[in-house]
Length: 217
Ligand SMILES: NC(=O)c1ccc[n+]([C@@H]2O[C@H](COP(=O)([O-])OP(=O)(O)OC[C@H]3O[C@@H](n4cnc5c(N)ncnc54)[C@H](OP(=O)(O)O)[C@@H]3O)[C@@H](O)[C@H]2O)c1
Image 1 (spheres, helix red, strand yellow):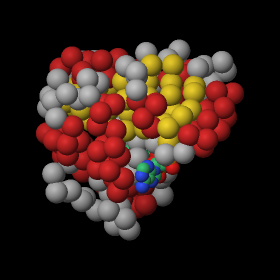
Image 2: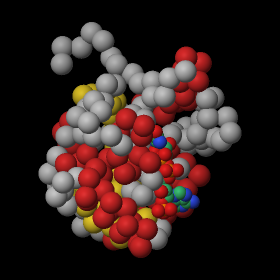
Image 3: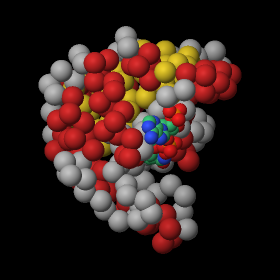
Image 4: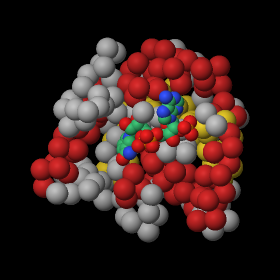
């Protein structure tokens, strides 16, 4: 697949790009600064061992992609989506955003639309199928492709076909991905990340994660 990563120069985007390229996907890293994205793509391409990673601006990264992934801080979420709405029409968008409100990142913050993913879907309309995922996978482990992803990735959207496509793509990261229901459930998924950040601090961990027990998969 051709995967376009908006904000792919960042901590989470780099890990995703590297893992997907190593799994055989074509990855486009997007940035507000095309030169920065090209530099990151060259660095990651070397680590990917021949995997195809290219860099450019965010609009270029999304244009023509089979799947787009939004990897920018919540403060940039709305403006980035407004800018890219034309390129995102007709596509599946994985929104990994957690609406943290620095400096209180260990406290749940419900944004005006209740979740970043719901805000994205409302902003983009039915032309874009928003799938929320990856809120509980820390960049600490994601960036090291030799490190197993221990936690589950909970995935939700209002389009079962889009959810299934994303679950298959997440398996290529080395993760167990689970269908967590409708997009409204992103309220709960996004709200759990500050709890994990609290657990990290409270128990001196770097990347607490979630594992669901009792499933037959
Ligand atoms: N880090 C984690 O462990 C983690 C885990 C789960 C979910 N998440 C979520 O994933 C998203 C990305 O997290 P991250 O840690 O990768 O973030 P990050 O490294 O701080 O930023 C990612 C990229 O966003 C772009 N960006 C920053 N400010 C921007 C602005 N004002 N407008 C447009 N683009 C901007 C930057 O790209 P350019 O400067 O190149 O444009 C940057 O490289 C966040 O929503 C976060 O909640 C993170």
